[in-house]
Image (tube, rainbow, N blue to C red; front, top):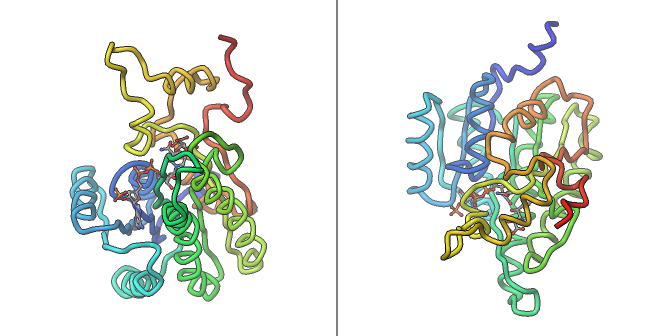
Length: 266
Ligand code: NAP
Ligand code: GCO
């Protein structure tokens, strides 16, 4: 087989959660250009409509659905509707997520639970919903969008780090439990990516200078830049394709080298 054909997603149905914009949108768009039929969900109709218009303007056919990934019944209904309208899900990208930046001793248990619910329970619920059809088909790809916080902590992100650390281990467990069915489950660990989620960390200061966190990340990144959602496209297509059929339980960090680097001397 032509080596490049192994990277094709032709004929596959790819579900990317929370993909109206940001990292999910970039990954879904790349998968579409690799041949996949894209379906996505988001938390409300306004976001779904925003996403549908964006895909349309980019020339990408897509089906969009309103679904909260933490609602198991709604997710089961979504997967059944996708199977009826488009086809069984071949590729799942658990992308939907939130972050709350609150010092732990000031964070309520309800706020902690909300982050865990969306960022960890959500991927469990959606993965559980698509696995039976992947087992039946004898093939499937699940990609969990982890984080550098699957490996490292920092002030104010205790719930997020706990969720993303758990997501790394859920990735390894799905790989362990379902690898025998030719299902591969891997993670992508983005570094610091310029999306609405990180906008507060990049806002210019009143005097026009760079945000201190922005300067910090630049000094900590060998690539000396923030990532952009497009940096995740190739790794995602690779992990969704037959080219990665013997890669399982791995978290691929797409971070410009941050995790390898002590940081530039001040
Ligand atoms: P984002 O801009 O906040 O987009 C996340 C998307 O998920 C939004 O459309 C969001 O809707 C949706 N969502 C939130 N809760 C949901 C729910 N319960 N059900 C369905 N959809 C829901 O985030 P991003 O920066 O693109 O990040 C996407 C993923 O990458 C997240 O898992 C994030 O943790 C991870 N990540 C991001 C970075 C980064 O630097 N940006 C780095 C590493 C990992 P709303 O607009 O209503 O919130
Ligand atoms: C933060 C950032 C990070 C990134 C990402 C890094 O507040 O530290 O939001 O958590 O979103 O997860 O990989």
